[in-house]
Length: 170
Ligand code: SF4
Ligand SMILES: [Zn+2]
Ligand SMILES: [Zn+2]
Image (cartoon, rainbow, N blue to C red; front, side, top):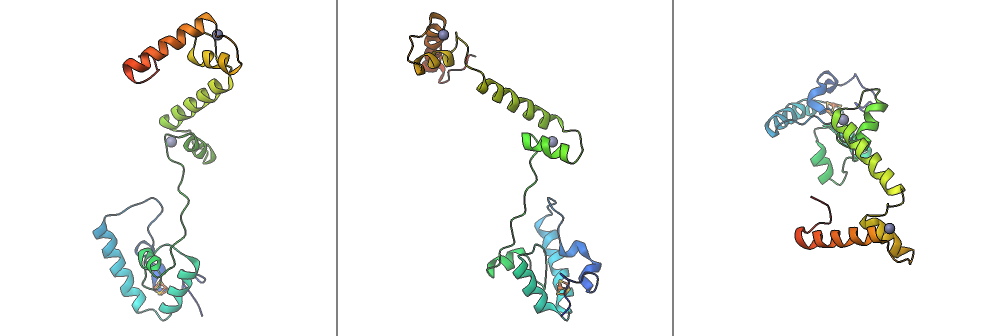
């Protein structure tokens, strides 16, 4: 048995790839999708291997239209297509990594996210300084009396918390 999945180029569907698959991350409107699906089905219905094709696509948990069936129908038949790995979003550290892997220059929001994450990690790695609430908490953790600047900073933070709901300075 020859299949579209295993022997590309043989069946009518291979001449109309746009009808049978939607490129990753490219969304179309419902009406466009429905029109493509209908057109694809008409091709499949004429196809001599329709049932075998549908079956193979179910087994492979494929995406797209195969044997007249789309992702949603395949899922309701109990063969949910495998989750596609989402590419890392822009505006995240992983996004910046993705750009570099693709040998691109990371975009502005990716660079910002990366710098922010690096700063945060650095701050977390450093012992807290005296004269801050974290400094005060460190004294307490070590079982020491807090120094004067830390006591003041902590009192200030408490006061802000009561007044504004956050310890962050305005
Ligand atoms: S059934 Fe449809 S998708 Fe499968 S090989 Fe035939 S035309 Fe292509
Ligand atoms: Zn980006
Ligand atoms: Zn201190």
